[in-house]
Length: 145
Image (cartoon, rainbow, N blue to C red; front, side, top):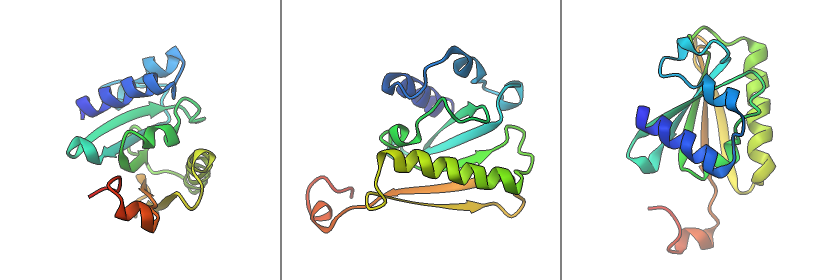
């Protein structure tokens, strides 16, 4: 996971998806050591041969751009508290609203499909994200295998 995390943090900086020093200081190998982090976003990067990366963020989620990060090739995000304590119903709804707003800011509903699933114990919220291909794109060389 460390390689994926380094990749996503470096690429975030390159994409200008994150911009402030407190965000960088919040990133810790052991999420329990990140005292200012409210949530852990763990990304599944398909094109990195099952590589994962994690970003620790505050409650405002203002230091990352999920739409820009989607260009790096993630297909799923697990959102949890750094200590895996249960998310409240209010947090689950706010996270859904924030993720939806972020993704639809850059993508239209006809370009990106995403759906949410909370774990039975509410220790994480799973977000599945998938690009929608038109029939013409699917037939072209640009479509994924």
